[in-house]
Each structure stands twice: as C-alpha cells, then as structure tokens.
Length: 552
Image 1 (cartoon, rainbow, N blue to C red):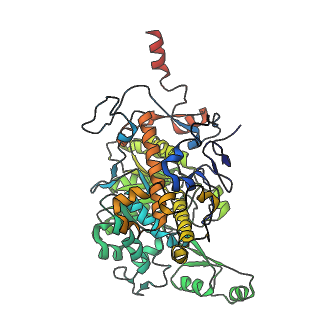
Image 2 (image 1 turned 120 degrees about the vertical axis):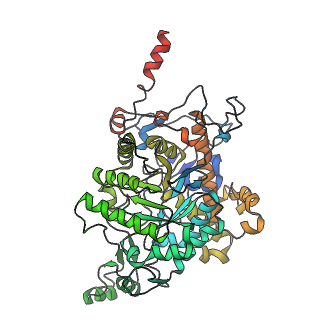
Image 3 (image 1 turned 180 degrees about the vertical axis):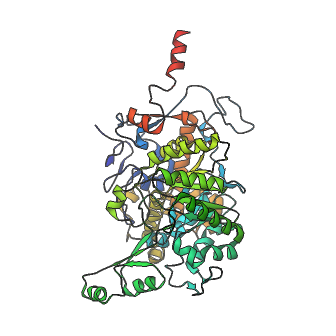
C-alpha cells in the first residue's frame, strides 16, 4: 500500500533526491541540491506545479487511496456542491463571482494591536545557524514582498563576532553594537509595506545579553518580540556546530555551553591532532529554577510585564512539542497575558542542527499536539476567555497542509509556520544567481558553477526561470528588482503557488475568506485519526443529513 509521498511523483514530474518525509521534503535537504522535489520546482515554475505535467497528452489519477496511521496526510479536505460564504463586499453568490481568484487570503493576528498579513503563513525562527545567516537576504526580502511575518531566531547577537556586549550586570544598555541583528531587521524593513512583521526571539542568553532592550531602543514598535520556550526539533536549547578552535573559545567566553569544552588542554590537543574536528555550541534550558506551574506562570507574567514596560506593543510566544501540561500552560498563560500570537511547534522538523535521534524520538507529533491545542483552547473559550491567536508549526510544506492545519485549529489558528519549506527557494535562487552571474557567487553563497539540466528545462535566464519574475518587476520596477536576490524571487514564486493552491482548496470548500474555515471542512481518512483528532471519519460526516435527504 503506497503512502502519499514516494520518492518520485510521475504526475508532477518531481523527484526527491533523498527519502521524503511527511512534509514531502527530503529528510536531509541540501543547499546545493539540483532538484527536483515539489517545493524546489515550485520555486521556479510557481502555480504551474499545481497541475499534472504534459497537459493534453495524459490522464492522471491520485495514488493516495489508503491512509495509514495518524498524520496530517490522513486528513482529507471537504468539498461542497453548493453554497458560498465569506465573499468580499460587492461580490454576490453568482457563479461569475464565486471563482477561486476571489478567495481572500488576507488575515490578521494580535490582541491590542492587529498585525496584517497577505496570506496565512510565516517563517520558522531563522537564528544563529549559518544557513540562516548566509541566505537571510532571500528569506527576509522574499517574506517582506509576500507580506508575511519573518522570525529572527535566538542567539544572533551572541554568536556575532562583531557585536559588542558590555560586561555590566544590568540588562539595559548591555549591547553596544549588533551588526548582524541590525542587518537582518533592516533588510526586512526595507521592503515592508504594512503587511507582515519582523519578529525577534529571546532565549536565556538573549535575555542576559539585553537583546530586547537593544531592539526596542533602536527600532521601537517596528519589531515584535518573542519569548521562546522551545521548538519541535529538540527538547534542549538551540545549537550550532563550529570548526574553529578560536571561534569555539569566543563562544565559550560569550557564556555559551560549548561541547567539547575548548578550554580543556586534552580537547585542545585532540583538535590539534585532528581527533576532534568540530564543536557544538548549545543554549541553556529555560525555567530550570522553577519547580511548579504556578511559579512558571508568575515568572512568565513578570517577563511579559517587563517587556511591555520597555515599550513593546506586540509580544508573542513560541513553544515546542512538550507534553499536555506545558501545552495547557502555554495557551492559558498567553491568553491571560493577552499575547498577540502563540506558535505551537510539533515534533519532527527543524531548520538548524539537532541531535538526530532526539529529533526522531522526542515530543508530541504535530497533529496530536495541534488537536489537543484546539481542545484546550475550546475549554478556555467556554469560560469566556478571549483565546490567544495561534500559529501551528511542524512539518508543513504544501498548500493542503496549510488548509488542514487552519481547519484543525479553527477558529483559533490564524496562520501556519513553515521552516525548511521556505528555505528551499533561498538555496535554489542563490544557486541559480551564482551560476548565471559568477561574479556574485560568493556574495550570494551559490553552490553551482553552471545551471543543471533540471533548471535548463525551465529556462536560462532569471526572467525565463522564475514564474514570479514579471509580477515582481511590475511591483518593484526593473531597477529595484535588479537589487534583490534571486532567492527572494524564488520565495515569492513559491508563495504564489501555495497561495493559489490554497485559494482553490478554499473555493472548493465554498469558503471565500479565511475566517470562514471551520473544522467541518476536513474529515479523517481512518478511524484512528478520527479518535485522536476529534475530526469525524469521512463516512460519518453529514451522514445523518444525507439520510434525511434520502428519506424525504
């Protein structure tokens, strides 16, 4: 019995280089990949990849007739033969108005201040990993042009050799210079047009270093600040791997946990002899000095109050795939504190470096975590609470993933967080730019000397390769378009495909705006999924109303 994602998809003409996982991406996604998985190819051809190839010469049938286990791929999307809801003002239920391009993907999140976004998507936290640093311009410029939130992850200031941090004990004013953080914020803001947001994360080390104070003093309300409890890829703090003894010592002096310890003579000898080739820099676990839920709540509320006192109008929380108690705490505390967004990241994914077996084995898988998040949010809502807006994360890559996760968490889930999927166009665009313009290769971190066959099948120049090129040319003008990296063009092109695919799914469900999506728009492909998620089985949905029709 074949599951949804096999290594090759003959209908779309796509092929995974490695083994595909639940998201459709390869388990190991390489920056130098020459293609051509669905996400990779959609970063060039855009919405064309919504359809089978060789139109007019083929017929095509779905191969996912059997749904095994509990996952988002075991959830199916409803369609209806009549009706329409959520049409924009001025439109009617006439068939000429009820077309998928009229589906409105704009939405907003937040409590005290609303943040507008053009489509229900945000990036994962792109922090101190070297991948995030190298391809930041593509991620940030692309995200700003799309009109979605982009998240600067943890430790960016701490790992920056050019940043200057005062040794004084109080937090305010500790950071004297933070060039890498400034670059990331200002790159996004250059193309920000009122839709989207730049979000800056805080972990233990960031808090100690005074990142929040620096951000609010320099950028005011232009940035959202995010408290971080964890992520879905690992149950310990963030990590990077470095191959320089000098850099490892720098990170240890900055206060990080570095493994193995570069200050030990035996480690230094091992490195000199080649037995030790790299060092892992780790962040600290948070809340280790707190032993009860009430203590965590008090500490959390104090942190939120402190950040508001600094001047932050918008505050969010990111939590990982901990168990049910921590999930309940995150939803309850974020609701009580009137936070603007809670991102809930399920197990299985990641954007940086995580211990492999930890990533495979720890935590609550995404669909289980998200189903319980909806249940817990419903308990608070029944008590009259204005539940925090939520974002779901953890292995999403395609437009049907977005729809299913929005529906599973409705009405609380406002957008979907994507990590690895939105990094692929950054890699691809940089490789294409470096191959076409060798003089730029080092600057954009391109990995190709020439365009591979998989790209030449699409085109030879940027305006031939990227389906979104001319749309951006109209939006920005030729001169400004020439200044942005090809990775941003690829990201914009990929987002257009995701947006169009989401519009089509919503139109089929007769929902023409995002706030109309409910849990009734999905059903479970097997009984186990129905039991775990509370989403009825396909044959149970509307079964009673169907019998009424038959008996009328």
